Length: 102
Image 1 (spheres, rainbow, N blue to C red):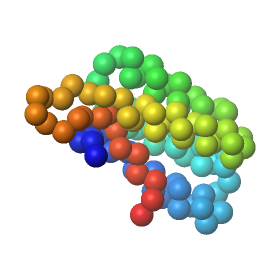
Image 2 (image 1 turned 90 degrees about the vertical axis):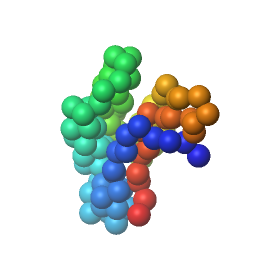
Image 3 (image 1 turned 60 degrees about the horizontal axis):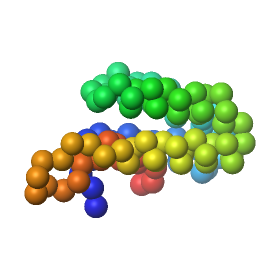
Image 4 (image 1 turned 180 degrees about the vertical axis):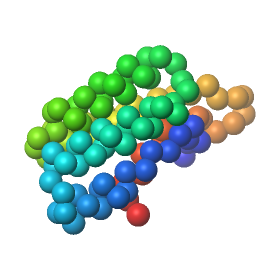
């Protein structure tokens, strides 16, 4: 288990998508919007910003199928698992926990 620097809450978007009240394109755009808002509070190294911009682009422009949306989510999960500086003897710090389920 890791100690997370940030938490990104996508539970409502996932719930709406799972209940089919939104389609995959709308889900992707909603995730992109949520990530843009999150980016404003992000205080980490600049490469994390660049990587997040690429992920936002995937959700906003390249999530027209479930497969594309799942690929973008995989990229987001991988990004969130970025190692952060961790004090000696402490639990490994990771960048962001992605909440998708209740």
